[in-house]
Image (tube, rainbow, N blue to C red; front, side, top):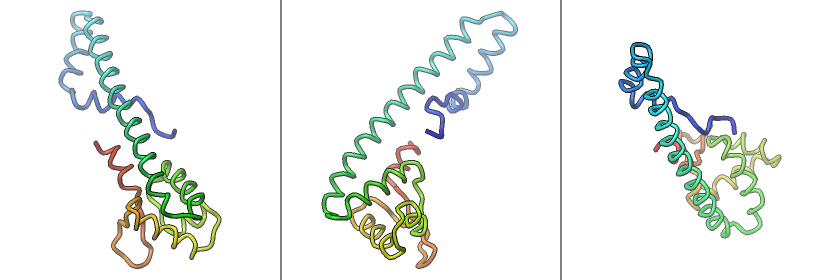
Length: 143
């Protein structure tokens, strides 16, 4: 994983005033226990959110596998592409071509198939230099 799994900064930002108040009480009243309680509550909430995201990703992967069944002989390359897109959820057809080591036409056809089964969506609205998104996966991280 390239990104932190336990990202406490969001919690601190959400409860900014409590964060500053807790730090101030450590400085003025030596209230370390209050700070530790605040911090641990952040760890608990952040952990629960992370666990939920992981569960949603597992469910989504199962859902994607069900959709891939209709692609027949393209299933292996589809699975390889999806695996790559879990690390890089936005790709052009040229990116797909490089990731899979296939011709541009094969990459374009596979992308079109994944769009048709609802796994990928085109983001630019252009007919050239299109960018495709693993939309449901990205949505999980926007929650």
